[in-house]
Amino acid sequence: MTILLWAEQAKVPAIRRIAGKRSAGWSPEQIAGRLRLDGADHKVSAETIYRYIYRPKVHAKRLYRYLPFSKAKRGRRYFKKKRDPIAGRTSIHERPEAANSRAEFGHWEGDLMLFRNLGEGNILTLVERKTRFVMGDKQYTKTADETANTIISQLGQLPQQARKSITFDNGTEFAKHQNLTDQIGVKTWFCDPHSPWQRGSIENTNGIIRRDMPRKTHLRLCTKKDVSDVIAAINSTPRKCLGFKTPAEAFLNQIQCCT
Image (cartoon, rainbow, N blue to C red; front, side, top):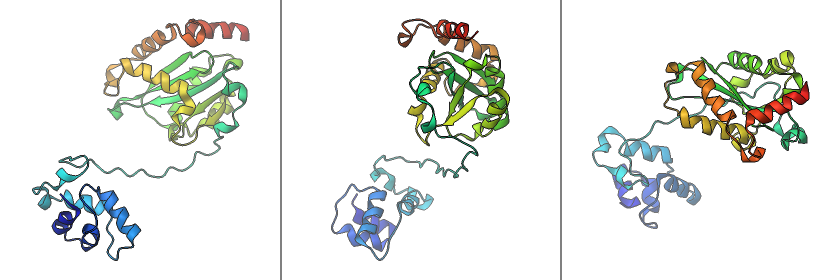
């Protein structure tokens, strides 16, 4: 299928304009981009081409076969609403070197694990950076209030030296981060947008949890004990980065130094 034939099917003069110069194999995005580059009088967007190809009246012609991925059905178009910045957030670039290098105990990373069945709850996970010790709990919504309360409940039981700071992504579930500072004295840091590697410990930990609790898990069938059992198994597994101690052993050693 050439661009010229697409143009004949779609009756789009702008595509015909370059069809004589170019051969087959262009994607709608490439076509639209080239039209803009050439300064065509009649421009067309990639979205317009896609919409034409998947129109019910045109679908029988099976023009989708000539798209790069040849899908008979088009996936839903999701347009992300721009988030308002989290009030009072402090960039991870201001986090002290002792926390960055894992040299100091008491710096955490936090995340909220989501599941396919959104109405069945989530799992809040927390990882101490130096010892890789994991804490976590099941919660029923992803609201900022419940998330903050869960973190306060988890970290609040530790001595102050064991809860110096916590690093989050930019999810709105962490918008009440100031509550952590006010109630249990935990400083908060936020990663750059779309930079999960800046919280490598929590990303790795969540991946381990997913082995037992993949996204398709029906969380309504899992109790808080089920979640704690999965976390306990992680904390009792020897880690090379800890000299083959378990996270639980490393964490206990640090806690004893704090008391």
